[in-house]
Image 1 (cartoon, helix red, strand yellow):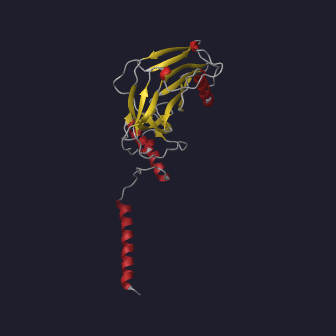
Image 2 (cartoon, one colour):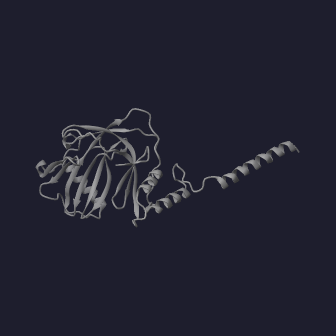
Length: 285
């Protein structure tokens, strides 16, 4: 027997065992992996931490995977809907433009369009989300207001009504800086709020790493006030672009442009929507 070789094997084996024991005794305990929380134990830890802050992450809500590094996205805002990106042609039998009254809300930087004869269309069941979306899309198309490259942002219930929101997209991702909101009552469409932005391209430069959705949830949980007795449930976690316009506001007819950042948009069951910067983890206003 080669005793020298056998002794070397035994020493190596004992070294490995000692390293494992040392890590189990003094290594980190209960720390959430900064990567994707795909393991069951990591999801349990995440849900426990969120629950301590009164934030529930249901099993039905799947966290998106962390994307590859991303860039800033430039967008342009046009105050007048007639100067927005190309829209679908009004469908056959669409109501004349005089059926809609228009006004510009300078404070919200919105163009508000309302049916002249009150609520437009037929009565709707506010509990039927599919119907709400269909009624909203039909109204926008009938009036030539439905842009290309649009994505459903969400359907939000409000007192005695609902709001269906659409946002522009770029490279397959929603751009939450602009929106087209259709407000409905049981009688039909009440008004449309138009605050549209046109994505114009990525900012030159090297892409930056994106933080995981789990980290964004923990950041939000740390922001919310604990111990107020309120329990909030997360209903949606989505990656997109967002950033408010620059402080300098142009004239009423001028185009303004700014840069948006990748964000994790987190929607709660009470209708609150939060945007967490996917680059630095800070909440966006």
